[in-house]
Length: 130
Image (tube, rainbow, N blue to C red; front, side, top):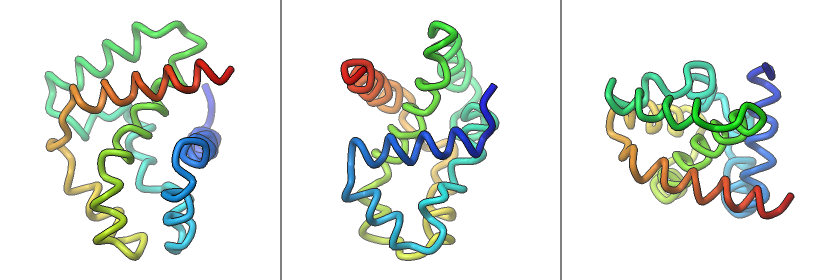
């Protein structure tokens, strides 16, 4: 299993590849490019971001991935969540603590179907680039 820091590094690379403008926004906000606001997501596989039945659905999708593709799909879910929050973040949050607070407030409010749909699209994008 990869360390959380390695996963965050891979997630940074994925953000750069799909949205350099958002990457630049994160790099301009102190410590935001470290993506520490995603730490809990990756550590707990989104357990606190969705209600129980939705967590079970997310985990079912993750665990149905081939073993070698599982970690990338977890990162695609995180990327999808950031992508869904991006407009609000970029218009309202200018500091790391504001980004962290906003994303923490989204716990239980994410649209699981939209997140998984977008994550699948990101997965297809990265698979096509291999």
